[in-house]
Structure formats: C-alpha cells, structure tokens
Image (cartoon, rainbow over all chains, first blue to last red; front, side):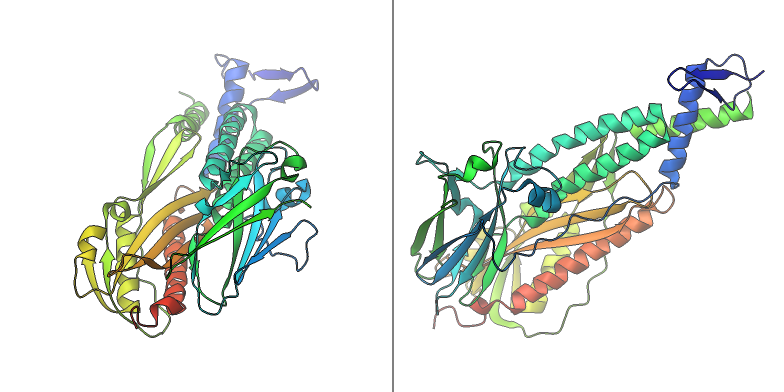
Length: 240
Length: 202
C-alpha cells in the first residue's frame, strides 16, 4: 500500500516512492529530499556564477577627488552609489556601513621611489582629528557572516527540497565570492618607482550607513621616500 | 530490508555526513614548477629568508561546519626558491631576517611573506572555485636595512569544483593554475624592479 502525503499549502497530493506502511510521511519525504541532495552533491547540479567583475576606473568620475604634491598625484574615488558597490562588490556596502575608496597613485617625480602602505591611509571623519586606518581584514571577517546565513539556507534545503538547494547553493557561492572579492581587489602595499602608477581599493569600517559618510571627511595619506626616508603627507577631502 | 529503503537511507547518511560532519579536510597541494619567461638576472646577491611565517603558512576555508586546510608552506618555499634563483645573480638561503643581515656577501635581504588567501565556491559539481593568494616580497638593503623594493603579488585561479570522484583532479588543476599565476606575476615584478637593477650604493 502506498503512503500518501497531503501538501496542505497547495492541496496537491504527492505519492512517495515508499510502499512500506511502517514509514511515516515526514520521514519518507526527508529521506527523498536527502537522497536528491546527495545526487546533487554527486554532480547533477547547475553551475554558479562567475567572479565579480574587475573595476576599471573611468577617465572622469564625478566623485573622484585629486591630491597633488611633490611630484605625486593621488586620486580618491569613494563608492557612495549603491549600484556601483553592488556591481563590483556584490553587496550594498553603503547600507552595510563599509566605506570603499578607489585609489589611483601616480609617481611623477623624476628620481624618487615611494613606499605606499595601506596603514598610512587614514579616514578622518568630519569634525574629528583622529583617523581610522584602512583595514581590509575587518571587512573580510565581517562579510564572512554571510556564510552563517548560507549555512542555514543549506540546512533548510537538505530538509526542504531541490528548489531550496539551488537557492542555498547560490547563496553560499555569493557569500564566499563577496568575501574573496574584497581580498582580491584590495590595494597592495608596494614601492612605486618614478613614472609608475598603481591602484586598488581601500576599505574603512564602520562608517555611517549612508552616503553621508564622505561629507566633510578626508583621507590623510603619508608616503615615504625609500632613499631619504622623507615623508610626503597630504590630506585629501572626500567631498567638496 | 526493502532495497529502496536501503538506498534512501544510504543517500541520507551520505547527505548528513556531507553536511554535518564538521571535519577538517587536508587539501593536498602538489604543483609542478612553472616555466618562467625569459629575462635577465638582477646584478645582486640576495639573502633569501625562508622563515616560519612562510614555511608554516596555511589557509583555512570554513563552510557549512567543515574546514578545508590548505598547507601552502612547502609549495611556497619551492616557489620562492625557484623565483629568487631565476631572478638574482646569486642567492643564499637563511631562516631569519637577523641571520640574513649577517651574511656579508649579500647585497639585499629578500623576504617573501604570505599575506592572506581566500576562496569562493558553491555546492554544485559544476560550480567554479575561485582562489586568491596574496604574497608580499620585500627587498631590504643589507647595509642600511632600508626597504628598497616592495611588491605585493595577488594570484588568482579558477576551476570547476568537480564531484566526489573528480574533485581531487580539479583541485590539483586549481593549485597548478594558482602557482602558475603567482610565479608569472612574481617573475614580471622582479623583471620590472628598476630599484634592483642599479647598484644600491653607487
């Protein structure tokens, strides 16, 4: 005799593959779901999306601010549009209180190599004198919290069926990719020889959860000439 | 026992084991040396520092209660030795920065340092695994101990995850791609290091 499961929500009837009366309906459904999940894990699934796209700075950006001094040009472009952070970082960083700033540095001096380190970029919010050091590690750990959500999703999927498995898989893939993408796009510490350019992203957290975090704020930059140890400091406002 | 019941219970166990085991998995890393682009050797003797930070470096990837451990130390050691050897006139290995500064024949002290690694993945066999490894190279003038050159290399690789039968093969391909990218970028960085091409003390 077949066991019959009544789905109350859509009033449809689902016949399970079990004929043994000793099986309760929920257990059968659980076993079926788990079996299908196992098949998916064995390789019968769909693929997930590609890595988040690389960012190529536009020739002109309405939000970019320029600082010049002693043969060095530094452009800072804070990402305050939700659309840009979603496109290149996969999350609404503005709503999450993450300050993302794209940095482009040109060493136009004829004979001076500069040491560029993230720890020497400080965000100074409006009305304060203390800076907040750029720190990608905090962001990467923070976005890792999304994995916990993904874990729950996957657990539910194992109980709930194939549709949820797809959602959970996509969620896990997205959460881990967001985290990896932050690592991959972060500005690297390096020396910058005369005539060379470099670029990358700096992350500041926490910042106010709206685009207002740049109002009145500035970034203090301190570069060092490798031969003379001379310090080249400048403060670049993020808003006009 | 009904064979269908047996089949279902086996699959259930397989699923629960996969999702809830909470195990640590050691990811084997075996890579072949990358063919390096042709180029000149830098006219310097380097004291290459192979310290514990490099040798013991491992990355742990956590997902759904499980941990995958990538012991990068040994392949990073091979990579560093190979790249330094191919890029400098002469290389002497040492285990610490202090001992490197004490090598009188060395012009520079060369320190490779693993900064971080991260991975993104999905659940499905066709999912792409994307792996990023960040290595920083610092060259210090042995005489003055000043940093003369610093470069951070961000290597990336992407490969299909594979299923339980083909996963190991794809993991091997992923690691090879990662170290190929790392080696090529490092080679390029040394070749374009103008600070290391001219004499440190003219």
